[in-house]
Image 1: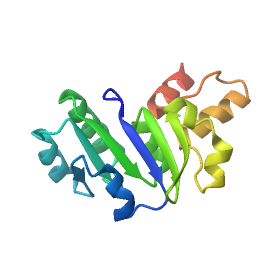
Image 2: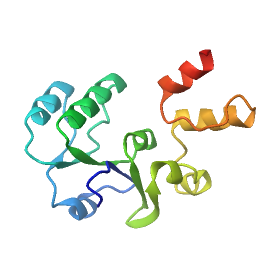
Image 3: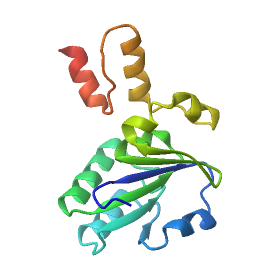
Image 4: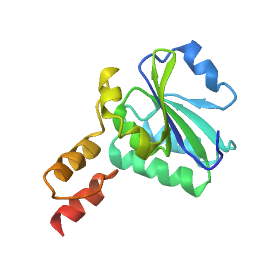
Length: 155
């Protein structure tokens, strides 16, 4: 793994056997926002595995977690079944069961809409909306962030 990337592992079968692939890094599961921020404030590791950690968090809370990680130079591996969370990483692995189906930079993997849909995923909402707006010649680029898309829509 490249030390400069944050990774997202999009998997539809997350069990202890699957998580063993990442056992060299400390793992954090689902926690309330306040408890998670306290745990991360002085975390000694340079890379952390999040196991569906963002599942019950609001987008605003996740953004603050991302800022906290960035300020402490902590990289992460986010293991999730939520395709929306794929936007938080730089590099994505997509698994169907235990079989790796896709791998690459976020911009490359999220262009593989047919493959993602075949294994039960779609595209993150903002990416799908941006593609639809491209189709109608409103934009000519893909957006990875809803705030940027809305700002450009109103410009």
